[in-house]
Image 1 (cartoon, helix red, strand yellow):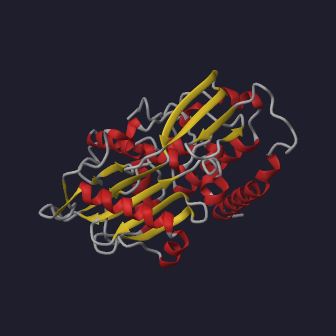
Image 2 (cartoon, helix red, strand yellow):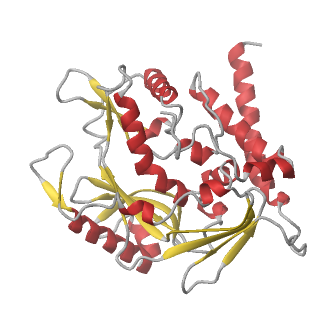
Image 3 (cartoon, helix red, strand yellow):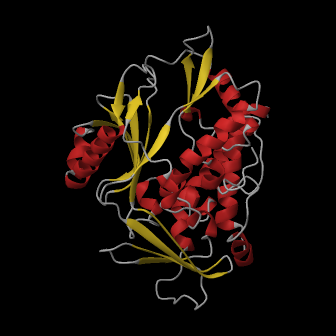
Length: 369
């Protein structure tokens, strides 16, 4: 049998196991009438005006659940003054105007949820991605492109009863939850700017990349009437009790890359090879998925640049505990599949408890870049 056929069979088998994992995941749940032990690991999420929700699971970890706080966003909030456009600095919009625009998008989404879904737009924004958003309960991640301004809005919304409801917003959140010890988009979204800054500084030190990468600007946004989600962990990672609070609603506002007019044509294999080489040089601090990169024209040279569209800290999302390198994207997919299955099926109770307060070698707090 040819090597290519063997690889194809292996990938088919992995995908089959992925599907089986999703279907049978419910089978791993506790019996509905079984009472949790007094010292069971659990996390309660509450917000003013909402009923608290508690999840009992040894799979939950201190990081990322208690690694972030609302105050972490304050230093990177969008400024109120003029913000020059990325491609034309002679034009600008005030941060205040952008903030008011996001406020109105949230208002429309909360008051006209299903109508917004049908129209695929609001007064000020066009939906460009909503596969991880639940319009019925209004939670998850939804991404808008501003109609009149060159900016993208990534909006994150959660409530106590939706925070751990990872199965209602698509397939990906299920993987993140099991691989990342309770990780979800709402938490990893808070890594985007810190990781962007870490990656930006690292690229300056790498000669082969320092003149060929563009990292778009990003800012956090919080609503005027902001409410926090309070997380209370008990019997987790050696802590009898641990607490934090994070925004119930927040957004990441970033520059728009015009994929239709700015990107260049490049052979797919060459793109993937360059993306993986870049990610390996950055210790996979960013997600190697090809959709997270744009190959754009460099207006100053007869060359192209690679624009990084998504700077979510990938080790947090995938629960990576050590450095890894990948030869190709198939190698990357295989790693994710194995990591997911290992965390779902092949960890003892003691393994899970030891991971609850583990420190990753590719941590965001002590970056190796």
